[in-house]
Image 1 (tube, rainbow, N blue to C red):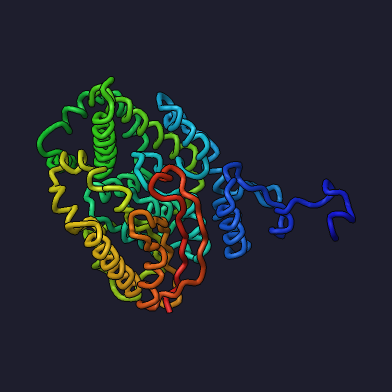
Image 2 (cartoon, rainbow, N blue to C red; image 1 turned 120 degrees about the horizontal axis):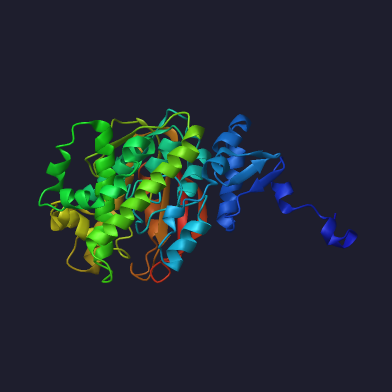
Length: 415
């Protein structure tokens, strides 16, 4: 019926036209691409799995989703004593960014965990199956998979990113009684880690459950180390005390409020490999979700330089291995970047099972690529390696508008 034939205010909500059930979206769902992903996950998941798995929904027919129940408790520690910008980020991202252990160590370029959860639902990864992120960064795909009972492999050239992913995963199942009060020992822990070889210090801890606590404390130490390079009003030791308290409270709040909704935590296996040479068997992976380094926009090695140096790693060696950072000039770096990405696409195709899906989230940046669109080159490379583009979703980027305005969520199927 046309609008002129009836009063506009009697028309049903457009959401009622999109979904068969009476649904309520989470309050943070305010972007068009999120609505499209919500529509896709709603239609791709079996009916019996909707309440248990959906990422963008608050309720269906009056029943709350597990995502809403798990993450509706704000973690005060994430916003106390933070800048107004950081506070707003976590307050607005209650269901999208700051839940579980995702809020530990803010990392440039990380994607929203809620987005990853929706993508996992859309490509049909089931509990007990295995997913891969060959350029895992801060481990968002791996942590989100684990929360859904899905196993995963993580690969990243940066030993610091490997460590961060490991700690975030282990902290999902940390012993609360061992962790409780750890921030009261911040001075002793600061002295314990503030040595020439902190990794050697960790080897002194023989109990695996206690080691989880010490590794979480070391991540807080490294977080505050980077912070201390950017501020002059507080020392590293003072910042460590604050960050450690935030980590302790965040993890305990998650376990006490949300863990009861988790039936099984998936495993995370961190491979000491590269995305260009994945140490996995052919046709062994049920799905791949990743994002390539925006090496034209972010120098990831420089971003982690303080942490890598402190842990005793050679920054230049890592830089020479990283996608898109090698070359005498921009043209040479650009050629190497696309050659590297073709190798990545080839390896993804090799390890992915037939008919399964590879999802890449990639920024569009023609300013620094001589007019070449990154997503077009990736599509071209994937086509050469039996990965067919089946869907593309445009997503605006927030926080990187000086370098990239949009990014694409590209869905490829292994043929």
